[in-house]
Image (tube, rainbow, N blue to C red; front, top):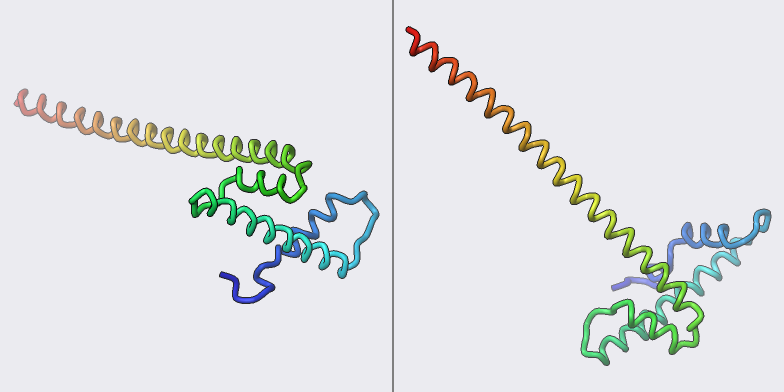
Length: 139
């Protein structure tokens, strides 16, 4: 839980980057305006979180799911945000799944390489023991 109100604010650097990306080049924003936008964004996120949590509790769940957020946006008259957010969320999930698959593939590849290396070591050891056995038989 947050110990003070400042703990509930979004990071200023991220807000500043979002503002910079949203505005045309050459437009400047005062520090007070950035602080006001950051505070408004924080309040908006807390409001949606609270409403989504209430929805989850009504559905006898302890965890907020994306559907709760999308439904809450519609209830709060922000329905125009739902479709773009759903698209972004789908892309995010695909990216995360791709990263997991790549990590799994790289782990499997490294395991295969390790097994090949171990098999090679076994073959070398077997070759040495066979040579020593043949030398023993020749004597």
